[in-house]
Length: 337
Image 1 (tube, rainbow, N blue to C red):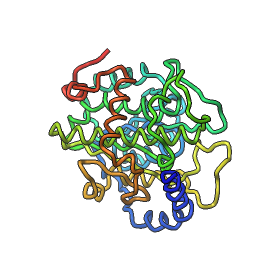
Image 2: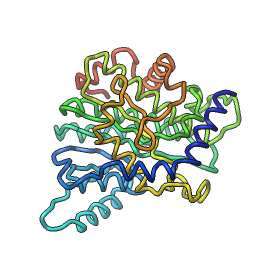
Image 3: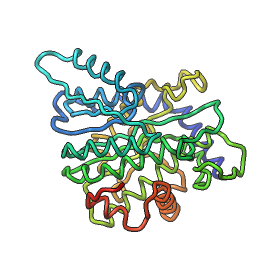
């Protein structure tokens, strides 16, 4: 009951205050300038619309070499061309499109294998892609994983792990997970991740979404702790709630209101966490949770190291890996079938 009350309180605060707070925070957060990010390689998942679109665009126009990782390759290529047409002749925009479908582990592996073959370092990984299947029945992937948990957590975690060697090539790197205040509504129930698991309560898409975002958050925190314990301090792990934003997640028109942010405003939160210097000074064990361009409040479950480790272990088992020793092998850049 107490967890439910806290979740309602955190959500109510967002609904009531986000428009007021963000109007100030967006004015105070410095805008990127041309050439500021020259030479940095950035991967943005889900970058053909919404927050991902504006995040990728702003970083590209600031000089970063942006990789749009998405399912709709043709659409992404048209977007990249339109961005290039918007620049003057004196500036070259570096935008590349690569196919990625987080519903498919084989697609994730192919994407990371192609990136690894390029030999390039990765400075910023922005895990933006996500789903919220409002009004639909419980759905599973071909591998029997519930779709919210697959896209928002399992696929994202696999992508992150397999890109770690490239991030460790950079002098410093950031993993930025686009999270949600909805994680406060989630529960740690790994048994519900898979097909055939008995549900203790009636299925709810919002609860499943919240649980997937909670698992994503807890896994990232566990990752940062493990990297620190291995002496790997160059990778900063940041989870960010971008605000309650009008996006494709709410494309059916529900839950909309004047207090909601537009995608470009939500993207400013993500960009701030991706390159902002202030973020470096508000971390614990190279981890931070941000909301409205400032440190935010996580669910108490995400503050529990044992629970975070449980999510870590179950995630690796779901991916078919042994939790013990796997990260050290990934860091050593060994390949897995």
